[in-house]
Image (cartoon, rainbow, N blue to C red; front, side, top):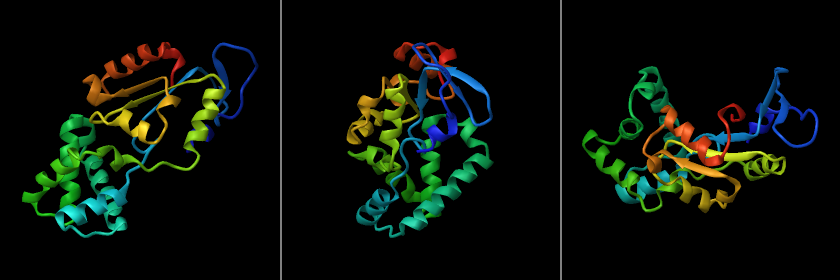
Length: 206
């Protein structure tokens, strides 16, 4: 996990209050609360889990490498066509899986059924269950220095279950899942809700 190297070089001073750190650019920042996303930050897509499901339930045989490559192609297309910025989280989810499955050779008429099976999977949190080595230790490093930690993620209600599965939920002061609270990033309400839940001020959060 790269967050420590990305954000912080050293602490200036001692004692309580907000932490003062110098970034890699030499700028001084003051904050005491850090919010993390889930996807591609704390956790990453488990392509092997999807590969097994596609092969066993739908007869779609692809390698992990092929699935990952088509995932990257699909994401680039969504960004290029500016759909990420214009579609709702829910609509984007369905469109992303439709395109991904098409790239994997699934017929158009079958994409909805497979997408629904993924969406309604009893262990759907496992689709995003890969974690970099050292992530728990990095979070512990922040907590030991007095930082409050939180999660803000656009998801479908499975974030807490994922964190519980990874034995990570106790490391966070608040867990905000858009599928639970009813509004998603970039809606400012989700950020305000997270700040209120953790008992911080917006000026002290990153």
